[in-house]
Each structure stands twice: as structure tokens, then as C-alpha cells.
View 1 (spheres, chains in turn red, blue):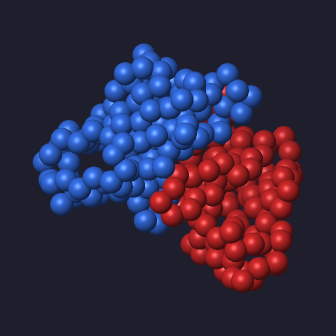
View 2 (cartoon, helix red, strand yellow):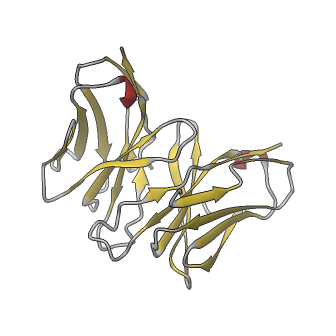
Length: 113
Length: 115
């Protein structure tokens, strides 16, 4: 059973607009969440993370929001740039446990000039 | 220089062959991981190691084995490759001593094709 779900396989937005990528999880033990970005022919690279004690974390153009009651998190990119075009993976872990990451299937973001 | 390197980057092999994928890191991290990525399935954990003497199975370890030769080296073996092991394989590392233990750093990947 999939514990981390990214229900949108793809998303297309115009340059300068906001990109919103969504992620849902089912395991209430998850308490640390990460977003990774992956370009073709490269490994995933860490983008931003959030602990379950927070509901928002911001880093430049990237903001992650966490709604624990809904078991939902989202990544906002404002403004979107063509270089943001990549596959974005949501991941979750249990801090203090094995800390293994459980990944979603990814969302392919395309930012059109 | 890359902090996490994987060799080979691409490999084509035949069913039944033994294959080893290698991972080296210069980050000084104690934890290492092997994942595979299949189209539409995200990344799935094969094996992970928290130090040289610690090896743990992930969610899809059947058909694979690993060896942690040193803190910096973690290899993945397919004892008898089969076509459904065709995938992109990633090695990753993390630092147990870091305040952000869950943050993992990935290598560039190995594309394996089993004919």
C-alpha cells in the first residue's frame, strides 16, 4: 500500500506563475517531509524539508506547507522558471526510527516560457 | 568532484549474469542506501546500511545482495539478473550525526538493462 502519494503525474505552468505540487500520506508516524528535484540523467537533489512541528517552511522561491490533520503537504514555487522543469518527489520519514525515506511516484513539472 | 559516485553509469547485460553496481562517497557519511527507480513508480528502497557492520533489507530486496566494504563504499549485486530488474539504480548517503538525518544525497544513477 502506497504510504506517500503524488496523484498528479504531471503539471504544466507558465513562466512567472505559481506552481503547486501536492503530496498526501497515510502513515501518521511520519514526522519529517522532504521534496527532491530530479533532472533527466541526474540523481535526485534535495530541495526543501519540513518537520511535523511546523506548518510552513520557506526557502527563496520554494515554500512547503504541511497540514497534519489532512495528512497533506504541498510545494509552492513562485515565480516558476523554465529551469524548474523537472520531476519532483515528495518523501517522508520517521525521525528517530530507521529514518528510511518513503518516496511518492513523482510529479513532472513543465514550466513553459 | 562528485560527492557520491556510481559505476558503471550504464550497463547492458543478459539474463542470468551476475552484475555488481558500485557506489563510493567522499562526504564522510555513515549511512548508505540503494534505490531503484522504475517509470511511474518513484524510488523504492532495496537495501540500506547504517555503518560497515550493519546491513538492512528495504522494501524490494529479493534478487539483490549488498556489501559494505568500507564506510565510503557500498556495492549492490544482482546474483542472476532478470529482465524485470531493468531500471535506474541510485545510491544515496546520509549523516547520522547531522541534525537533518533524513536528508539523503544521491549519486547520478546507473541505468541497467537486462536482456
